[in-house]
Image 1 (spheres, rainbow, N blue to C red):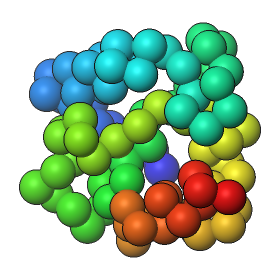
Image 2 (cartoon, rainbow, N blue to C red):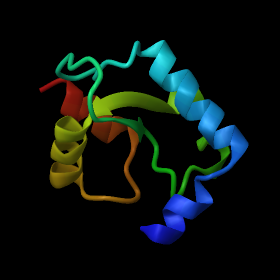
Image 3 (spheres, rainbow, N blue to C red):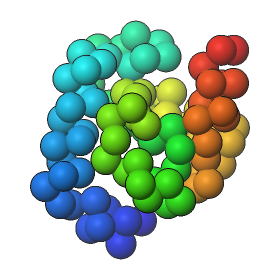
Length: 90
């Protein structure tokens, strides 16, 4: 986790996060929570879809609770956009 956090500390990544937060109006796309503790969730996992790590179209804003619920169901790492679409449609 620490290594992953350090690797995400670069200008392009910070700009990507800001762009996704602004696009989604600092609101969880699942439950509608505005502000508070929010995360930028990669649709195709950061670990394997290296080409889209900083592509705003590969991410959405989720609150901590929704983010944790997604990963409880689908695990961490190797996640896909299809998993997200299945989860969000429930």
